[in-house]
Image (cartoon, rainbow, N blue to C red; front, side, top):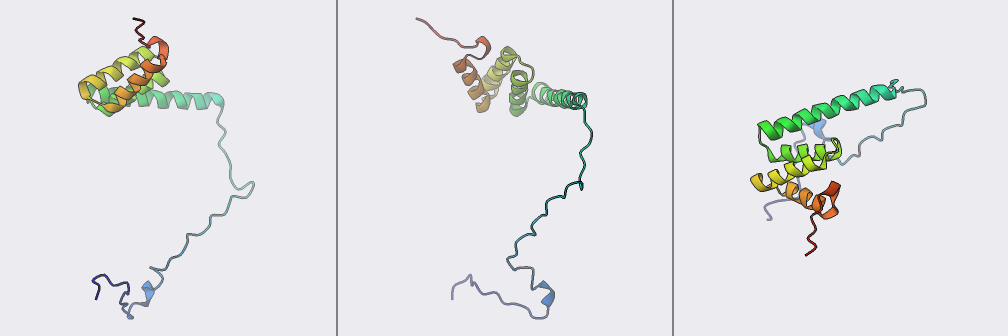
Length: 129
């Protein structure tokens, strides 16, 4: 007999567990009816303030992870923050390069290569010779 039988012996003493193993689909959620939900009144100024706080918090996290804890992922995130949020491609390139060379972190090497290849903010180094 095959050691892994597909038949399962069932203990008839415990009828409460009969439904536990049946293949049942989850209940279908019902969409909300109009008027049954409300949105909070958030002004554009409030939204901008929340975004600024969030970005400042992320910057502090990335900076600590990179500069204090020396985590390659943190340095890569800090460089991305400088490139996307801080709009400082030169600072981002410095961090990517250091993270690539000192910590051998592949994603930083890749990002730095893309920046140089696409000429991000004057970083393109083309030899005309």
